[in-house]
Image (tube, rainbow, N blue to C red; front, side, top):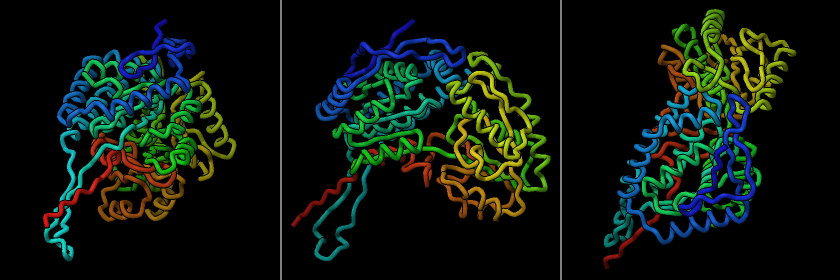
Amino acid sequence: MKEYGLFIEGKWIVTDEKIGVLNKGTGNECALISVAGEIEVTKAVDAAERAFKTIKIEPYRRYEILMKVSELLMNNQEKMAGFLSEEVGKPIKEAMSEVVRAKQTLILSAEEAKRMTGEMVPLSGAPGCGERLAFTMRMPVGVVCAITPFNFPLNLACHKIGPALAAGNSVVYKPATVTPLSAVLLCELFAEAGLPDGYLNLLTGSGAKLGKLLTDEQRINFYSFTGSPAVGKSLMKSAGFRRVALELGSNSANIVHNDADIRATAELCVKYAFANAGQVCISCQRVYVHRSVYLAFCEQAVAYTEKLVMGNPLDPATDIGPMISEQEAMRAEQWINEAVERGGKILVGGKRRGAWVEPTIVTDVQPDMKIVCMEAFAPIFSIIPYDTIEEAIEMVNDSVYGLQAGVFTNSIEIARLCAIKIETGGVIINDGATFRTDNMPYGGIKESGIGREGPQYTVKEMTEEKLIVFNFK
């Protein structure tokens, strides 16, 4: 069994304590990974701080390095996808797609390295300032801590590391405990691309333990975190005056009006609900369907769901792999059973085998059922009828979350109303809440987070605006 270490200041460090990495498809250990402690955290921050203060990387060189990593990533696509499929349990075809997306995220980040611009400030328009010239510059914040989740461990890492390096920052990178292998390979590729030692440092181990050590480390200037609202709130409290970007939970809703293409929309909602076994922040979880087309939508959704193939994630034919753990699958099963006990009706699925949960559609649900009001993060979605668009919007907004929502309609007036009235960070018209490209500003409101991802927007958050004033008197 292969053992992997931590990556600190360009060197791989093996610690005495190790944890096993499970192949989620088989449940067997496939690797061992070193566990970082207080000493390693200090060394990683030392290295990041030293690199930031002593090694200057010109913007064009940052561009070249990030572009080189994007090329190396595609050269290693099958290896990286294999890691993703094993450690996450996602179907290999989804894993291959994640590598392609990560490549694009790195390219977008590379381009931003060449666009570090400020703006002119018209001081001459102020009384007595005719002889003054002012402009702003964007300056890197310093050491960035990137904390990533298990569901998209590669692309979400690139969404944090890419913009951080493009802006001239150094990085301490903490991947999810259960998915460290893709992180190891990513660090290897950055080293191969010529990133100076210390600019990217990898720490693996318990999230609870390392999270506290990292937030206690006052030399870290910025925290970029994707994960649960509870952990995000705790991190924000610990960060104090330091800056944070938080991408947290959601129970994403979609509205299907009576003028939508029901067949195509049902197929798309099924696809979005069950991708990565439903373990997607913007997974299709709540679908509000106009009562006049409700039964037709349910019929089509069931028909498409029944075609999905559950099986070995490494099999190209597989559509649905296991959830990240049997414990999480048991939790999803409990939520389904709770809904049924309270009157919910399972149209398809509903059963669990180990870490596999059948793709499940539930109707006759209530707003306070866990599968509706909380983040399911499992292959489950509910279909709920509505009579008026105002009622649908009210139900969409009845949530502590506000990441993205989808609206399917051919009415420009309904689309306009939804765009204005729905309380989310993004409203997607004639596509699902799950739609995302890596160059768009992605993020939410309420308990879905703070800040926006997408390299162009993240670079701005990971830089400080400095004002420069010249007096020519």
